[in-house]
Amino acid sequence: MSTIYSEFLNSANNKLKRLCILVDPDKFANEKAGFFLKSLPVETSFIFVGGSTVAACKTEATVKALKEHTHLPILLFPGDYTQITEEADGILFLSLLSGRNPEYLIGQQIKSVSCLRSSNLEIIPTGYILIDGGKESAVKRVSKTLPLPQEKVQLIVDTALAGQYLGKQLIYLEAGSGANFPVSEEIIAAVRNAIDIPLIAGGGIRNTLQLQKSYEAGADLVVIGTAFEDGEFSAEASNLSLESSEI
Ligand SMILES: CC(C)=CCC/C(C)=C/CC/C(C)=C/CC/C(C)=C/COP(=O)(O)OP(=O)(O)O
Ligand SMILES: O=P(O)(O)OC[C@@H](O)CO
Ligand SMILES: [Mg+2]
Image 1 (spheres, helix red, strand yellow):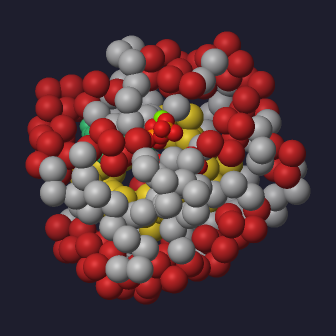
Image 2: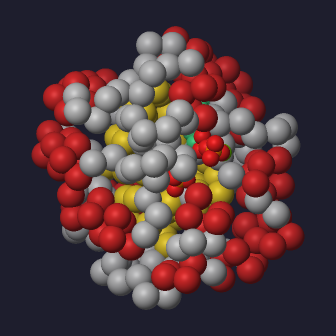
């Protein structure tokens, strides 16, 4: 059986760059799911669903609405354990390694177990690293942790590698949704060079150039949310050429 994680590994090993679109259930009109999905670039490989704060039950309804219109894998990207729904295909089992708040290092994870132990969701252990994107992020506010400064490249690399040593299967470099600037190419390249597991970058990517630069620096998967919410990217979407293939 082909798992989502095996697709991540395949992308990383074969340098197939993957685009993930983030849907925030709080901002998403479920009745427009079909229209939204049609507006996405054909290169879209995964749909992530989540937010720092999402009202109860909204995630499940959004995943169901998306599932009616797409066969793309849907991965939960949860800000907290209440966002877990069996309707999705998998979950990024995040631990916020850049912070020192035990609730986001291990607390939320323990709270999720009563739901996850009987679920069929594919669980992907993910080291989540918040990096300063020039604007206060919802992740910072909700987790009450500080982002790592972009100039602290060695600290970011060491954090990512510590995540790998802890057994994380994926590292996610996050500049924060709606960031003023994305995670720098220097950081992506340095982390890519240090770790052996797939690498995701996201936050503040609003055009094809920034997307390509993130891929070229070494991100295996790039996440875009806000640009599709705003419709800014959609006009360019049909011109995207990412050399990625369908899974
Ligand atoms: C493993 C389980 C059950 C939960 C993970 C809990 C952890 C560690 C969360 C990390 C901190 C956090 C709040 C992450 C949220 C990530 C996310 C979905 C961001 C999407 O963007 P938003 O932060 O919602 O941005 P907007 O303000 O634009 O909506
Ligand atoms: O909304 P944007 O800025 O694209 O960020 C997406 C994602 O990385 C946030 O977790
Ligand atoms: Mg959100």
